[in-house]
Length: 125
Image: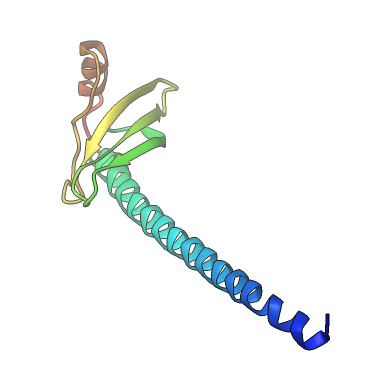
């Protein structure tokens, strides 16, 4: 087989490989773009929720947020919060949040947890 003929037989294979590489790169970039938008949206809601909780309860020392979930298109957002108070007491519950809320007394919790939080109403500076 001549070199010319050998080059011609690899040309279609090279084109297929090149197209596959470009497609894979495009899919990767699209998924990364979606991920960063999701991360920015979650961060915006997390900061808003922390501020709302600090405007709702006094003596908060630390807030941990986990399992954020949201609807697509954006509208509803919720997560789990683990709140540590200055006196060492903790509470863990699920909470929905909206970006326009300045305070947030909502949550999926037991009556005991609600009583616990009601005794701590105030503002954390």
